[in-house]
Amino acid sequence: MDMENEMLDNMIRLNDEDGNEILFEFLDLIVYDNQEYVVLLPAGDDGGDEVVILRLEEVDDETEAYNSVEDEDILNAVFEIFKEKFKDEFNFIDE
Image (cartoon, helix red, strand yellow):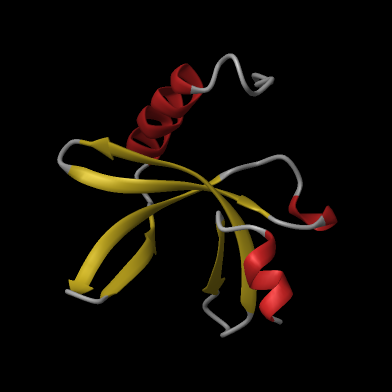
């Protein structure tokens, strides 16, 4: 387990609504409309190529919470900022 933690510092483990642990690669932290959002990529073969955007909220000085974003306009705006910042590093496909 120590080797896995040392392997990639940019990995984050989160629990879904059912308590299942999911591993993500941290891609970026974006501030939009005075809120912080994290852009994550599910790790592993079954993660696909779609990023996950979660709102970062501080619970207290030592604890952070990552909450889903329901507002499509916010999701789109944060993703557009992310795409612009990383346009030279990732090959984005518009659907």
